[in-house]
Amino acid sequence: MTRLFDTWLLLPQRIALHEPSATAVLADVHLGYSAARQRHGDAIPSRAVADELKPLVEAAREHELRAVVAAGDLFENGFDVELFRQFLDVLDRLQIAFVGLVPGNHDRGADKTALAAPLFPNGYDLAGWRVAHGDRPLAESHAIAGHWHPATRWKRRKLPCFLTRGTQLILPAFSLDAAGVQVDRDPRWRDWHRWAIDGGKVVAVK
Image 1 (cartoon, rainbow, N blue to C red):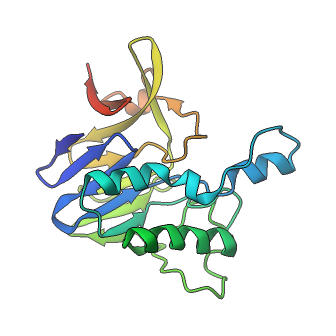
Image 2: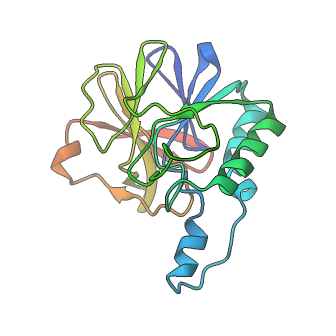
């Protein structure tokens, strides 16, 4: 793990943890990804929600986690009531509260479901930090967002990474199915610092 801005921990489980509130912020979980790919004819194994959330379970064993905020794309193919119930079941077993979802571009229909899901379409304020989904520009100086699935080259491998610039933070995709978009030579990220996830460590990429 790596500590940033005095109050945040970057965890190798692809989570940013706000220590004072014990709130985990994750993005791009893409629940239902395997089922969506199977419907398109891809021969990939099914994976239950509980399996998808194993990194969160691992993080909860190592750190105090009291709440979770999803910074967009909780689902792969639109809001799914059954997948959401399973997601909440895992959090209940961990005794973690679901604060809410900042809807991403994959979370279609989240505002029309009869199941109460706390939604923050304009972003969520977490102790002065704006949690957003990065498909819209980050206007706030203290901001944390998903959407981009950043990855970087480190020791001849492509690894998921966090990105920081000043007090803005871009999260890696929480989903293990997300291949990641390599940012090393992309001019959009030229002045951002990269923090690669190398096994159980988060390391600064020089």
